[in-house]
Image 1: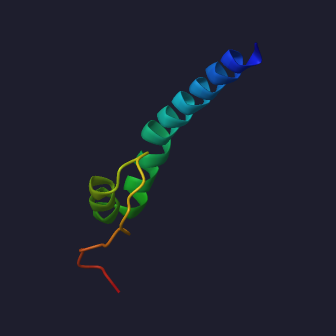
Image 2 (image 1 turned 180 degrees about the vertical axis):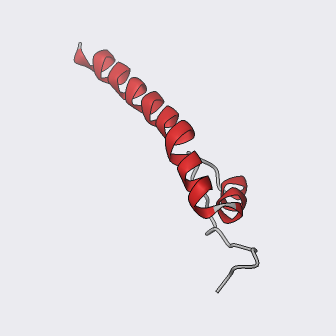
Length: 62
């Protein structure tokens, strides 16, 4: 009987985290890292894991 309640809490937790990341965390990263972060964000999905590592192609590579 508690499994539906746990599922509901998990969904609420996921949605709240998604909103926090999108409206608080990501704008802060954009201000801090600028174009580098925007390029990264365009290539890396938010919740779907990548099977190959991210490879930057920016001019600021070391």
